[in-house]
Length: 365
Image (cartoon, rainbow, N blue to C red; front, top):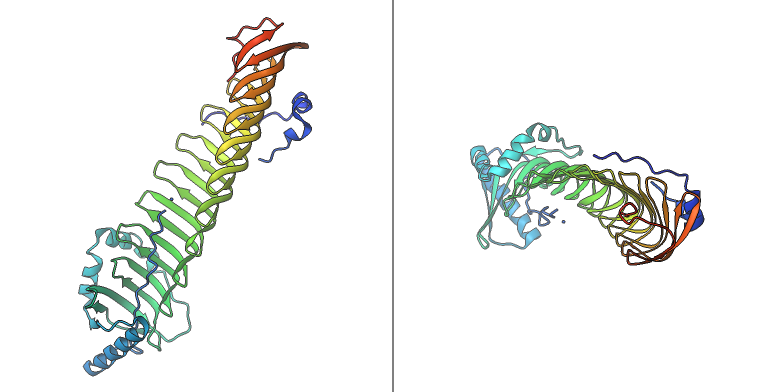
């Protein structure tokens, strides 16, 4: 990263020219979470006999009909090996579950209901030819509750804690592409602290609310860039810092994921701009300093010097005037030491001046 020195505050001459208030500055994830949660119900107590299995199947089937209005659903008990085989059909999912096994094992249900463990179950819908699988626990009312793992009809997987048939507490949700979220849940929505990983490259760690990034967090991007700051509904909003892979950075205010408000942008070649931004570009009052110590203090429009401004060379010479699309334009004056010379520009070219100016030595950035 280039050397980004703080800008000098001693600008009385600039304030006189530009106005006293000029010095007043302050320093697309994919929504992959499955919204259609599987409708599963289970037995009120552990399975112990063939007769009981038959009664439980009738009970589950009845609840499924009451809840989903489906009449073509059958339930069957499957072996642990068959359930694991279903999980292993998608290598991405099985790999992610294995990599997060230690953390998943720490997920504990914190409710007060009596929890009953049952064998893995397969739910088949003959009408749509869809199947779902569940292995875990239920409460005494036959609702999924406690700790378990679901394979949905879309081959997505949730492993974690449940309450009243909803994802609640801590868990990991993995879609069939290998994108996943691990962290807090509230009523089947991402809530609290969590991590969202997309394609093994983009990673967000921070706060969630209403199934979206809300609050403070850190987001890592595939090209090596990193954003640390505030989010509102998945967008960068509030204060934050975005560091690019080449070492350049922006530190300041964001709105709708764009630079908006007061901020500081530092390039990796040593340039630094401090001032106002709008829609991702320099807009309004700002101070721009180059590596050779040249400084522009003035107004910007859409990233260009535009309006009244003061340009100071490293040797102390100054140019006061108006700017249009990054070029001096119109009347102004040139200061060499204590001498002042009137000057007229037309889109960067000197039209009239009493000063003997060498255009090469007086080139502006």
